[in-house]
Image 1 (cartoon, rainbow, N blue to C red):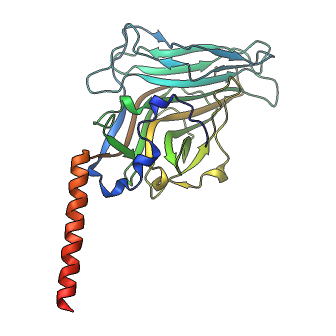
Image 2 (spheres, rainbow, N blue to C red):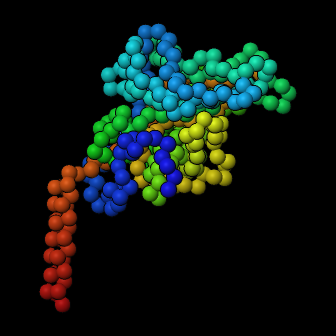
Image 3 (tube, helix red, strand yellow):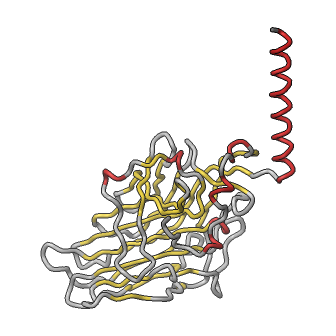
Length: 307
């Protein structure tokens, strides 16, 4: 079994505990589990980046999962909105200078603050190459909204979606996909959506409905190596109905540019809608089992009496 890229405490429910869960789930409803947007900081606030890895030639710089973004001083989530988020980011610079992040943090923008990730600009890459910025911004289940943080199972349904307010994306090859850390066939892994947004700066919604969107397994190495790109188009074969539990949700982005403009993105208004179902208390589960058994027994007796 593949080792999960997060500590064991991050895994909210053991696989065995989910077997037969559909028999006991109650209070199912569609809900907003992530809603990041609004007035968070009084001034531009850099990310807490932690460990950094640079390639031997200095052209690729990677921030791994230690690049958490806690609620640092001056960071306050608006009432009812998502707060803490996490990330892994990479930039590669094909010019004469080494790679670096020119900007990474929460950009103060009145009532619409943004998460900003920008690689190095100012130099055009050599002919036939490009500068890149790739990243994953995600929210853990422990921070989900709508009561989805504990005592519940989060999955996808026909109405699931991801909305992004995208700003200041340069003219480039760009891709935005939904990302979920999910349980499939008893294993926790990251998956990226077949739904992809490739246009410019705007507010867009990706339809993640189980009837329209499929998913691809996305391998992430915990070691300090290159950030894996999104899978090829033919890899998106996993149905959303097979994602039995979601323990993290967010957005994957990839920006590739051939000019001197720095590749990067500013994201705000991140909203993730999913399906939330409360898990009944053990006593309620037992009552449901007894009730079902009683109804079955009554049905058998009526059938025998009519024979």
